[in-house]
Amino acid sequence: MPKSAKRSRILAAILLLAGLSVAQVSSEFVTDDIRRVGSRLACLCGSCKNSVGDCAMLACGYSSPARQKIAAMQTQNISDDAIVEDFVKREGIRALVTPPAEGFNLMAWLMPPLMIAFGLAIIWWFIQRMRKPAAVPEIDPKLLERYKDSIEKDLAKLD
Image (cartoon, rainbow, N blue to C red; front, side, top):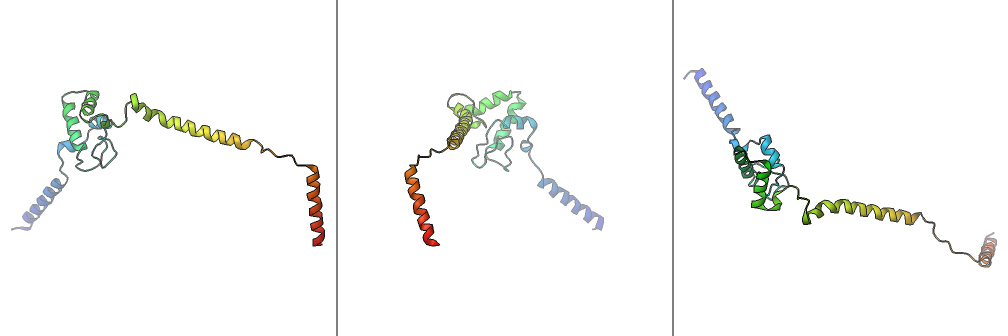
């Protein structure tokens, strides 16, 4: 076998292996449309806290099938809101990245600013309390004179 034929076979084998090592199925490609809808949906695999649109886990048990479902629904010209509603019907409210601002979930939106305001009010109250001068009790002048005499006697003994 000539050297050129051997080299071409080796080159073909290397190219074949390189192509197989980077091969991906079309469902693994995340388009901007899939990412746009997926950014509204939480990845529920239990291993990460990402959205379906930006979950970087390879072969994630939740985000990969979710992306495929989103892509299939988008090819059927289903709106983004309808896709998100379908996921919420199947998974419940936990499928959303951010809870809706209604009902009990409204507390998730209201409590952080309220607690910050409460903390600032406590700090303001504490500062105002510390700014007031401390009440100094009145000292009886006779008692003060007696202590001064006692100090003078003790200092005289030291000399």
